[in-house]
Amino acid sequence: MSRSYETVLAQLNSFDPDDRRLAVHASVRFGDKMEIVDKLIELLGDKDIGVRDAVVGAIISIFGEFENSRRKIVKGLCDLLCCDDISLKNLSAEMLVKIGKDALDELVKLSDHNDKDVRKMAIDTLGLIKESSVIPFLKEKLNDPDPNVVVSAIEAMGNIGNDGAVDTLIDSFTKFEFAQISIIEALGKIGEKSSNKNLILDFLIEVFETADDPILKSAVVESIGKVGDERNLDFLIKLTFDKNLAIQKMAVVSIIEICARTNCDLKTNKHFFKSFFKKAKEIFYETEDVEFKSYFLDFIAKLINYDEVKTFLLGLFKGSDEISTKAFDIIISNAVDFLKFGLENQITVEDFVDLVELVFYNPSPISDDFELKKKIVEKLSAAFEFLDSERKVTVLNLLRLLDRASFEDILRKVQLDSDPVVKAYIDSNLS
Image (cartoon, rainbow, N blue to C red; front, side):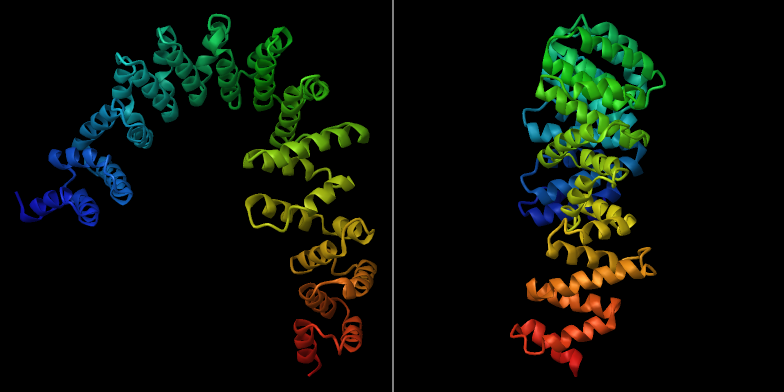
């Protein structure tokens, strides 16, 4: 046994978390030693988060580099799925998902464990690995005596997303009343990439028309949004007037998702659009789902002709997150429309200044539009005295770009401005 190996092994047992963490990093080069693997598996339960994070990285590295350690690692992680520490169980499951198909055999064995909670977690992990080869095994697990394990098997089939589970899920719908919503959701996930969408859609619509439970019906509408295309829009449009508010909202979400995903248009009248857009905005502001928000912006990007849409987008572009950036891009792509909208006094002067600044400091198609620029200059000049000091400076910078004469005219008029920020700017330019 080499001295360096002995040192690493000793430090892995140190009372000092920094020593343990450094030893974990060093242990990777001894990844073919079973004693090292055993110790690293044990240290996944370390109280120090830095040590735990280092151990996760070390185990994954060893798994990739040392083939003879793989079985030991998988077995050790699967054993942790049987422990009482829920955080350690979850961490082990996450690592098994990263390991992927090499963990399947052990997880399949664990899915027959005596403890129903262990069976459930093993099946959940199988579903997240997303290997279609385990679909036949998951079908067998529908016979498990525990309802929660059955639900996990259904959800796992949905997460894997393989067409081979569709017939089984449909056939199981009447058999497992306690799992009907899970079956509908699983079919929705499978249907996103399915080559047999019509079978799934026909079943979903049949369930909607025969079900009484509004929660189940709402789940059906959500799944139609994931599976359907523009042929399902008329059906969903009718549901936006359903007496149940949850079904109404889910119909709106599904319409938006279909239109954004398939790049189709919502062909309807202005009166309906206003009602629809009002509901959609409420959902947008209520939800934290960034994917839906992004779908919604894709949807309304084709409906810029509505003033309600322009007003909505102008309320979003000032942030720095993904959604604000997307709104920013839509405005830039439709710069002329937004500037003309702003010139009609539909927005505050502050927002108008921000809009002009946004457009003129980014590539836009309006540089040669003399009449449009003239109107913008007139509105900026008229708004100047009503703005705060920061926006006054912004207006002056914009006027210097757009119309030198108007810029110099305002400079002369406000030479005695008492605001220190504006005064400093004026003095600098006059000098």
